[in-house]
Amino acid sequence: MLVLDKDQTRSALPWAQLIDAIEAMFRSECVMPVRHHHDMDVPGEENATLLLMPAWLPGRYTGIKTVSVFPGNVRRSLPAIFGSYLLSSAATGEMLAVIEGGELTARRTAATSALASRYLSRPEAAEMLVCGTGRLSLNLMQAHGTIRPIQRYRIWGRNHEAAKKTAEEAQALGLQAEAVSDIEAAARTADIISCATLSSEPLVRGNWLKPGAHLDLVGAFKPSMRESDDTAVLRSAVYVDTREGALSEGGDIVQPLKAGLLKESDIRGELAELISGTCAGRTNDSEITLFKSVGAALEDLAGAILAYETMTSGK
Image: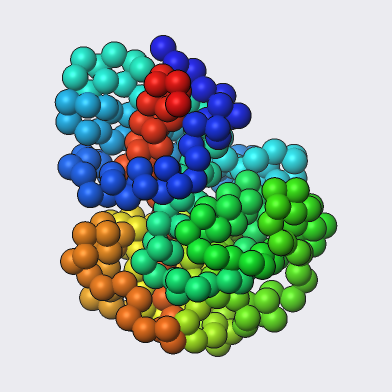
């Protein structure tokens, strides 16, 4: 049985191949049951979350990811997300691999955002603002830079020192990155704004978005969480990774729906429909687009299969 740690998982999931693998999985006959989502009390701090996410390709592969999200870990200098992925044969049930789930989650999440951006952002998008300084920030910059000619990256976080550290790490990777303290000013010039936070209040205001901007909302995975305001939703052509997930879990969609500001029919499409061509993506250069993702088990399965096949084939 193959066991991949964080570094091995990272090296087995190069961005271009991972983006393509997720796109192919959205076209496939993957079976994806509703994921389990459980709140867990943590005395003296915010609740934690336990996620169980199964998926399978009949006769080929089956897998399940277990993930824990502990928001309080920021005060312990620990990642908020830990997890593992168990990959098995869907023909025999034999366990094939155990893959480090935190790295898999971070990379597949960023790759899915980049995949959506391939259909929704302007092809010439050159400036990106990342809101958040967690593990996903660097991944989002690299993934989006794989599919768009981004020349300037800006990082904003509530902790400016953390934003500066993230910018330094991005610079070490060869990215033209800088930390910013004025989120509004940075948002007003950005072609792509990607938010990866655990915020419970809107960070990005709709009246900051310039014509042609693409808003990528990755965090705020509970109905009580929010990264954009109502104006951002109302000004945008809205897309989601899956309707089932976004309509029940993503606060940026759930809250406007409950308030009557957004109807389900206003959601232009989900990622599988974009990929298949059954719904239109960006229609013109001035349109503002919004993509809300809460994660889908098929994305993890795509990444796990890619990692397993990459490592076992010697590529």
